Amino acid sequence: MPRRDLLDLDATAQLAALAAKQVSAVELLKAALARHEETHTALNAIVAADLPRAMERATAIDERRVKGEPLGLLAGLPMTVKDVFDVAGMPASAGLASLRRRTSTDATVVVHARQAGAVVWGKSNVPVMAADFQTYNALYGTTNNPWDVARTSGGSSGGAAAAVAARVTALEIGADIGGSLRGPASFCGVFTHKPTWGLVSQYGHVPPRPGSWSERDLNVVGPMARSARDLRLLLSVIEDGPMAPRAPAANFAGLRVGLWLEAPGFPLDPQVRAVVEALAKDLAAAGAVVEPIASPVEAEALLEAYVTLLGSTLAEDMPEKLLRRMRWARAFGGLTRSPGPFSRLATVRAMTATHLEWIAADAVRMRLRHAMEGVFERFDVILAPAMPVAAFPHDHRKRWSRKLVLSDGSTAPYQAMLAWMALATACHLPATVVPAGLTAAGLPVGVQLIGPRGGDSKTLAVAQAIDENIRGFVAPP
Image 1 (cartoon, one colour):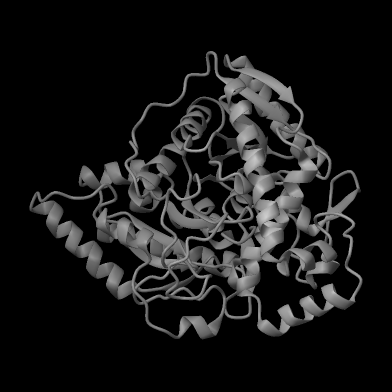
Image 2 (image 1 turned 90 degrees about the vertical axis):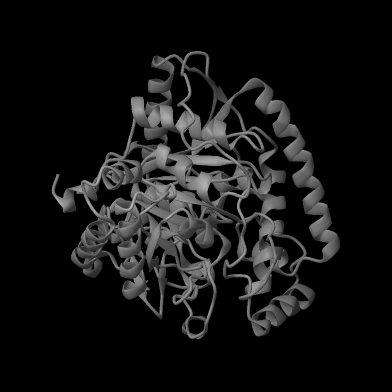
C-alpha cells in the first residue's frame, strides 16, 4: 500500500503496518506531514510543530525495531495533541501568545503517549482558554470544518477533530468540560470518549494556570480517533489505571438502550433527531432492546446545577477586571432572578457564585448522580444526541449576540449547546461519541453513549460494536 494511503487507515491498522515493517516510522511521519501541508491552508487544524525532535524520535524507533528491541503499544505512530497540553518544546498556548513563550515539560498524558512510543509532532488549534464552541484565536486564526470550510469544526477540540477527520493524524488527546471533545467529534464525524472523571490525569492541562496541580471538577482528558478500537487503545495508554485495549466489542443481543431525545430546555434540530432515531432503529434491528425514555433526571435541576458548577470552575480563568464587573452587576444590577440556565444573567450568577451556592449545586449533582445509578439498573447505556445541531457557519460576533438556528427556522440560545453535555459532565459519567450518520444537508451527526460511573469499558464496547457492524467513520468529501 502506498505510504500516503496508509494515513486513511485507523491507528490500529497503521501500527500493524509498522510492526510488519511495511512502512517505517520516518516514512509514516513524512506522509503525515505531507498531508498536513496539503490541508493546512483550507483547515488550519495543526498550528504548531516540533519536526526535528519528532524526526529524531521516529528514527530512533525504527532503529530499535530493526534490532528487535521491545516497543510500546504506539511505537512509531505519528500523532498530535490539543494545544491545551504542555509538550516539551511546544508549551500549551491555549490560544494566547503570552503562554506560548515559556518553557514546559510534558503533560502527564503526553508522557504516557511517548512512553508507549508515539511520535508527537504537532499541536492542534483551540479557542482562547478552550472556552468556546468554535475554534479561533488571534494567535493562530480559525480552524475550519473538513466537511464544509465555511462552518466551524467545533470547540474546544476543534483543531483535533478537523485533523483526525482529514486523516492528518490518527490519534489526538483532548479534554472536555462542556463538550469540548464531544461537540467537535459530532461536528466533524469522528469518535471520541469522555472518560469517567478522575480516570485520566489532568496535570499539564492549561487552563488552569501553568504548573497547577488542580484536578478540576467536571474536566476530563480523553482520546479522539477514527475508530472505537483506537479510542480503547489510546485510553489504555493515557489512563491512570489498567484497562484492556483489545477487549471484545459488545453483543447487541439483549443490550438495553435508553433512547433520550427530549427534555425541557434541551433544543434538538429535527434533522439531528432524525439521524439519531435512524441509528436507534438499526440498533433495534441488530438485536438491542431500545426503549424511548424521558429525561433520566430532573432536567431543570440538572441544568441549573451544572451551570453553577461550570461557571464556578471557569471563573478562575477570567480576568480579574471582568470578574469585578460581574460581581458589581450581581450586587447592584438587580440580578435576583435568571430567565433560564443559558442566559447572560445565569452566567454572571454562576461565575460569581459563593461557596455556599457551589455546595448547594454540588448537593443537587450528588442527588442526581445517585438517581442515575437506578437508571443504569434498567439500561446498559443511554443513547442521546451529542449536540443539538450539526456544524454551523462561523460566527465570531460577541458571545451574547449569537444564536443557534435550527433547520425548522426556530432558534435557541448559543449556550444551549451545553444542554446535552450536562448529564455526563455534571454526574462524572463516561460518554463515548459515535458518528451516527449525515443530516439531509450532508453534515455529520454524532451520538453519545452514556454509561454508569466507571463504566468506560461498557460504552466503548458498545461503540465498537456500532462501529464494526452498523456505522463507522466516513471521510469528508
